Image (cartoon, rainbow, N blue to C red):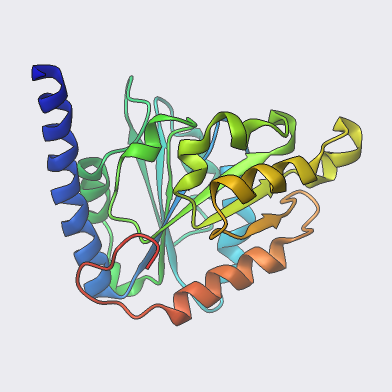
Length: 227
């Protein structure tokens, strides 16, 4: 029982900071998107195409989470108003305290979006509220069409699911209907958006979803995830 209490106390402490992060973002009128997935699913490639497409109307910042290196941050540093690297060392996910530190270096009043590129992992990040407003899960075709069923905890919390690298459908004999069927039992709330950052197919749908969420949201104290 002692170990269970310790875990609960850690999560409760994280949630307190996450609420403060969300309040801070709400007060500045910034929409925060937490991007989660396995390594190599295309989070950085997605941002490379998303940031310049939003730039004419919306200023964005990116918090990049990785165990080591600044390589992903370097790829997007010229595309966003601000990019902050968060190295977790051995940590398999970002937590609210790390995001709090990242937010402290941003001029939030000058931003419309903050994208949080979480550490590549399909398990750990699902348990941690970072103070984001929306959670977007990426699933790439090379990972196989069974991952939603194998990692339901991650997909249950999604506000949107992006099926990436769809230009590889034919080469991999990918069964997208299997993904849709699994999601119909796991999460019927989140739209499934099929796209390829390489070819641009589906990017218009993703960008429209982002703009709609940004314009429709009424920022208020303690906006809850998915509200």
